[in-house]
Image (cartoon, rainbow, N blue to C red; front, side, top):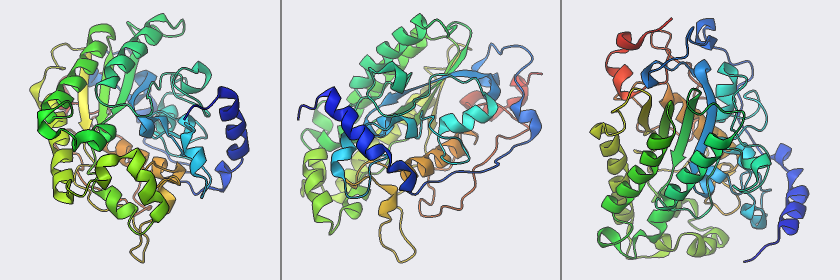
Length: 380
């Protein structure tokens, strides 16, 4: 479907007023120990000594989940799912404050008030005023984040307000859903195999490593997409829409067990990349997987056991405003947990789970190296 930019603007204006009516999750008055808000006395040279207040630049790579398609869509308005509500995106959205809406950006702003790069408002990746450094593109597969990585490098290196050689940067990555929606066509024998997916991710991250010193790449773990079949069960509109959004979900030969096994291959690939140490060969760059999604097979539920559709946009696939906030909370909690001790399964149905603070005894962005022995990386 071809949609003019003017039409999208009109649609954005029409549905924008519905944002406030949608359920959301914030943490009013959230505070941590005062020491955690302090920058390092000297700008750190090691990726394993980066305090959250040291992070100046935030970016993202991914697909429609990171572009936040439909996050602010009014209930019952699937047309609004074409809109990219980037300001609400769990990895890189900066609309509202943490009091009202959880995103990684809104948490980081508590530590680094001058943080730049987070998205605001509604728009596509090529609209700087909206997207900033969120280069996610709807429909993207792992091969496409290679192009996104190049675009992100070009923007960061050319932006007059970014000292790309010296400013510490956090780049969030989330990819794999669209690969899985095509996986049933060729499985492990084609372009969506674990090996090819892993290589595409490595290629994209290597572009960042080669061109962006002082960068931490945080990759959100793949999720088990068998959940989709529970979400749209007996919901005929969503079931039909998923035929177009995710054809492999409707392929009966691609059973729940096969879907789950394929998703876990991608999860394994992420952890293999991290464990290989290929992105820990220099002191000023690192790669960390945040695996909280890995063990979840049940979508968020209401107390009566029904799927909680407040979590989802009207297409029952993308995250709603509340869904983005909840995912962001669990992602942040993974970020502050040591590698090797990160949650690999969380209760999506429990909104009361707290938003955690960094550990005062290791106040850094947790990496493979500082998770083994933080004392080696302690700075003033």
